[in-house]
Image (cartoon, rainbow, N blue to C red):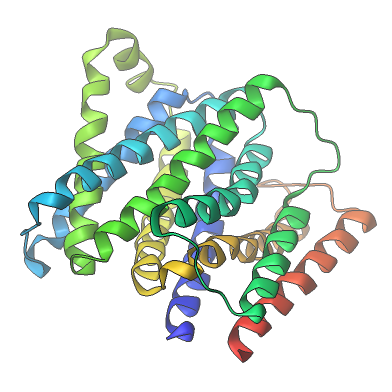
Length: 301
């Protein structure tokens, strides 16, 4: 069973790394947080494609959880992209990813009580978490109260998304739960159009749907959509006790991202050029060793 969710979440983080790269290139331009939140939310309309493959029945006691999940996901998007508006996308994304496993661990304990983990699982979680934090660290990092507030709220909202979706998947088939949660995300971003300022930002010719960024946006969100489906499937497969481990595997995403960025910087510097110093290489290698060791422990035990 462990190999099933482990392979799925690793594949999910591969696609998340591609989505992150696309977002980084798109968000180097003028997009507003409300605009990006709207268009990312609208992409969830593709949940309608699931209709031929699933029954829409949903127990009445789950409607509240499905609605709550959609709300926290939209809020997470908004606070994350609000931080990206003011700070570098690489710092924001990595901070959110590094903090999230801790929130997931606490929330899982609050929702389902203390979870029994084998010593090997605890060791693996610790190594994965440390590796994820280390690989996501920037050479120079300056934070502010606003930065801390926005990134922590975003991480908390996405952590609630993890927990609420698991509540749903414990009671209904995967595709049914996925449809309702994603479809409601689409529904909940539509009210953003009620406000004139939002409409101006969303439909501005210089926004993310401009000619120069449209292709990148579609690429990033297609990769992100696949990643979200795979992540949701991994959450549905994984036992409650290992949800923090599933989330802490985000370090694998940064390994993929590091390798992809290294390749592009070397062969296509006009697209993306990042500083790759010897100290950065050493830190990344140490992080990779920790993450790979954590993965090896999970597989072995």
